[in-house]
Length: 310
Image (cartoon, rainbow, N blue to C red):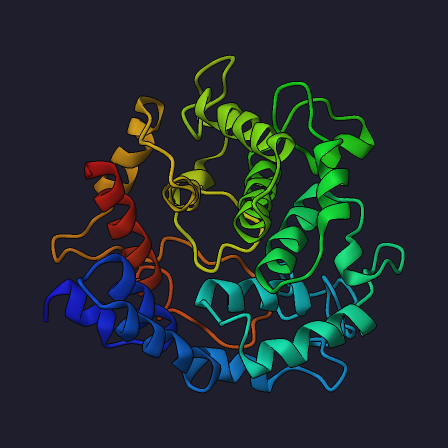
């Protein structure tokens, strides 16, 4: 079986993206496959786990039952589940989304201080992800965007630790904000201020080769070279390269070393492995395990390399 056939022998959430990004699938074929996400496979399974109040596992960032004594961070609450459904490509106009989003808006409250879900809370990494899913699913998140534009740091990015005095940006926080601003631009057309902020965040990452310290050239975090899926709030070079591809950016020479990392991880059979899994409670596994061939990593790596190679 070749790699494309292997990818197509998968869940609709992957198949429709393979048809769109890696084959000559027609728009009608892509749309038909994407529509299956609501009713089949992983998408349908996640939707079936939604509570009657519209929330997953009873909470916004954390499950209602969470006491803080579990390994890792639980990934079953609303924020992480909505992000996963967006990555799956659940159609924002489908019946399940039209039912869920108003319920989340009505009942969702952040654990931080009880803020309404789509109003966001205080951490830009959380607010960036809220902007992303809110904009994707048709919610007006413009007030939250204005807040996050005002929280940009002098070096061009963002950091959740700014409220505790940090004046340097974080790779992890910045990618979450960039994903949010990009989705907001796609949904609304954005503004000059949004485009300028997104450009500055991109420059923050590019000036550091996407994974190195600007001061010393050292790798910021070896985990940035390991490809996990789902990635949740975590940064890695495959995630950020897929962001640049999705944004329509032109390949930049400062990305070359990160692209080489992606290329180096391709196995002799043409696939990529799951390098890492962020620990914590999940609804169900989306991959066969660390060290096993990963359809999500293979899909994303192939489309990044297609974009880079022109």
